[in-house]
Image (cartoon, rainbow, N blue to C red; front, side, top):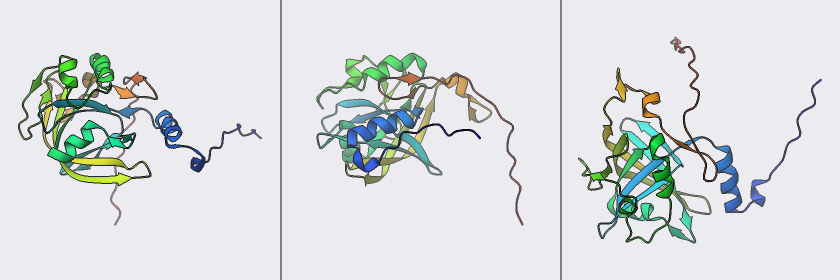
Length: 210
């Protein structure tokens, strides 16, 4: 009989918020990255990455990002989205790892990360927030829901995608070619990863039950 491997048992109630954050970001991996542009009330274009990110509905298409607080203050992205109800989510590829990482540096609200990094933008079709021309994917969103969670009051911001912008060559037979997209993901700390090996399994065919 095989002896079970020893385990480290941790009671969540004994952990401070920062300790829980470090634990979860090391366990829930890899995480896709939403590279988000917003516009402040004074017209400053803000850019920041968020790895607490997923889609929550296919029709209408909806994306969700979770934005936390620091010292009791929400990040510029959350403030801008709540004020304008508009934002653009980009998917970054491997060549953009450095820019994505550097866009996480905290600047005063009046400083544009887009300008600091020297990134070009293009006007949106459905929102006033511009999109990055260098990113292979951009999705223009309008805020639909805001839900606060936990003691830290992290905000889950859900936006409806109004338009998709994909680099030429990414679509084949109505599907995105993931290898060509070559997206990056977030691990714990300042660590990122790419797709690595892709394992293709046989398709599962659903049978109806009468």
